Image (cartoon, rainbow, N blue to C red; front, side):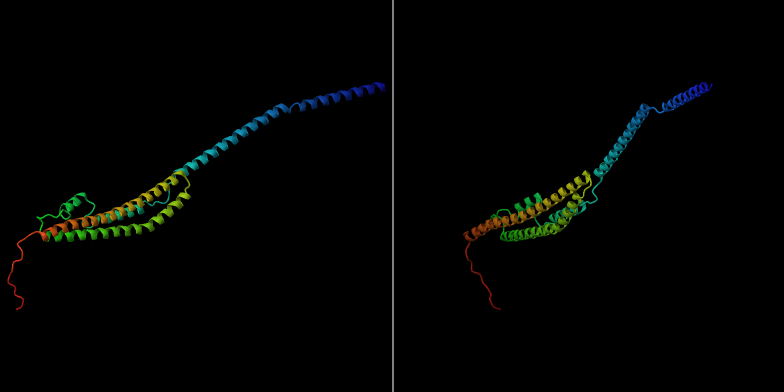
Length: 244
């Protein structure tokens, strides 16, 4: 009887252990490692896509910032100062005295004042032409010196503008600002070239007037010498009252 009880108790214990093991096995099967790994991989891929989108948005934002910099205009402009310098030089050339930079006026002067001396021209006309030619030469020298003084006065303004433009070019934040600074530097060079052209024109005008004066004076001297040596009526005595 006791043996039978022991066998029953052992059987009951074995059944209890088997049932517990089976129940525990059933609970462990709920966590699937393969499914968990697949979920982690899917989440990692989604996170990588989000990171790629963030990087793409950052690149687009940087591209927009660079475009904005390239489209930004230069805050400094020297156009007004350059135009004023050129205007001063043009006004000075337009104020040239007597024979100026006009083709018709030059042609009229060389057909009258600088025309070759002839026997039909009176002595008073020869003297008047010589005086006018001398005044033209002096006016040419005066105008040339005034032009040179104006150009020298522009040098200080040009130096200031060049310094500001170079500084703006070096501090340009985009392609447009650098291009605008370069264009203004080219405009400054063009203005300086215009000043140089004005100086050369004024100096050449003065030299040409002086050369024309010398040529006309030589021609007039020959005519006056011819008149002096030409045979005439000779000396005719006249009554002169020397003392009252």
